[in-house]
Length: 196
Length: 101
Image (cartoon, rainbow over all chains, first blue to last red):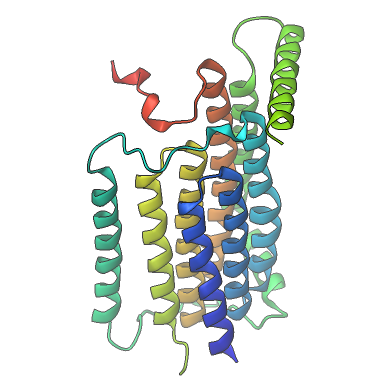
């Protein structure tokens, strides 16, 4: 059973990731990425990391991909690049060679590690079963790693402030900024309608 | 056929390689971001499978923080892309050579 689920989700993940790379349309890439992320969530369930599976679906598929699609619609889909034109000669073969060599290196390490990875469990860090997983994770996060959680909050605050600063226009008042962005949005709308 | 941890690690390696290749090949900044997300997901699979192998919660904790950092990275990165696209049209990473002097 586990074998079947693993194989199916592996096929889903790999076909989705190849779709991300080979799609001309960025929207199709985003949808293929949803496929990949769901496959990874299934793998997390298989590994009894139920909380992370839920978070994977909610945060990645629900927030990050929506953000991607939102930006794509904001910028217009007409930015689909021509995959046949190669601006830097030899870039693609080199990239494929580099990707294949990274895969080869990792696979060599995996094969060299006969009998699977080794290591020792840290004391009192059992992952529990699928039901207990969320409780144990929460207890550990808020007792042992509470400082890291605080730092995470700081990081998210910095990210939000940075996004606001970057998306504000440097010159002009607030009113002109709003008007400008509204103009951009309406332009995109008309472009999309024209394409349809 | 029994699925061992090595299978998970091999799948993660394939996914990471696909992400790397896509990041190097594609020139649309949005798709480059998506490829970075693919690579982060590959690393997440590695963390969780090793954690499951050793019965250690540390892997899942690391994935939690990776998720948070990925969300923050995407927010800032997409804001940067939008800010750049306001200055110049055309979504191509090769055109962004204003820092090249």
